[in-house]
Figure: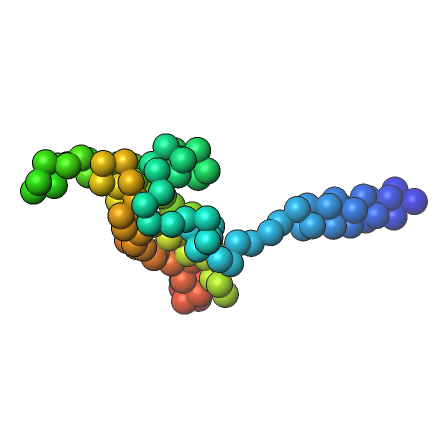
Length: 111
C-alpha cells in the first residue's frame, strides 16, 4: 500500500512539474511592437532593464546608447541569444542580434 501511494504521489508530482515547463522558441524581440523610432523609455517599460549598456556620442554630438538583452531560446537545443538595441537621442535606430551561444552541445554528453 505504501509503495502504491509513493508511486502515485511521484507520478502526480512529475506530471505537475513537467506541465509547468515551457520552452521559448521565438525571441520576444521579434514582436511587431518594436519599431524603429520608438522611445527608449517606452522600450524599457515594455521589456525591462537590460543586462548591460554602452554609451557614447555620435560624430555630430548626439547621445548614443546601446542596451543589451539576453534570452534563452530552444530550437532543438538551448541557445542564449544576446540582442542589442541602439538608441540615438532616446529613439531606437538599430536592432541587432549580437551573439547566439549554444548552451548544450549534444556531443558533450558522449565524453
